[in-house]
Length: 325
Image 1 (cartoon, helix red, strand yellow):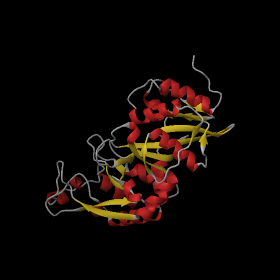
Image 2 (cartoon, one colour):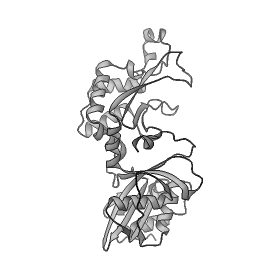
Image 3 (cartoon, rainbow, N blue to C red):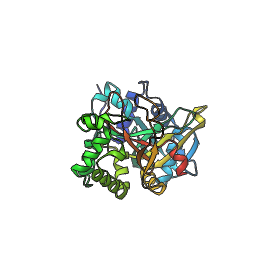
Image 4 (spheres, helix red, strand yellow):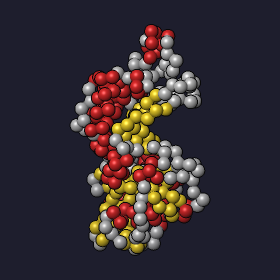
């Protein structure tokens, strides 16, 4: 018979124990196990900057605690929501202080007791790269209409003309160059979608205005608002930057989401960057370039995957943490 949690920490302990035996969650599961096995109380290590090297679990606990103004952790418990999403147990919802967890944008949920009879629960989004050189990391995956709906539902008005331009950019059925024989006859580049500079001018200009004016608000939606009624939106981001020789020598970048949004805007506003398609079925002819939209450290592109050809994808630019540092 399953245990009934008596409080938030107990519920997390139950779930951590239930899911601990499930393999395949690698990075998050190792962090979870380390946090749950640390001998407490634990003195917070003092660190400088956002890029740090060491045991990711220890670095994460220290960073969060320092942000909360604590020098010692009396107790901490963590779960991996990836394990929750893919396990048999995870098919049932677990209630924690009235919040039902089914799936959430956070990859880790960490509860820290920093003072007697007082605990804090935070969500953590994780990214990881296991290559020698950092690559970009997927942040949000949707459709043109889905993205417009997300903005409209959060007080950022998007017109039908702007939706049309974004559907052209994604290559939605009915919004492709190959739907128009007169365009297709003289087209030398990908016939499945319009590139940014080819989309409806009025709609494209509206997106330039929206992404420039509401950069912080949109960035926050992409970092935190993947699911409706998410009980644990991410408050922190932990990013393994590249392949490491050992767990104890892992390089990670750690931010609060608030910090990251501010640093992203300070890095740059809305811009477009020239590029050429150099691989795939529709390589660009020599000298042909297109414009890639981006704002801050976030890249905006057509998904283009075979199974999701019309999707809109947002990525964190490769090595963004070095640029922000």
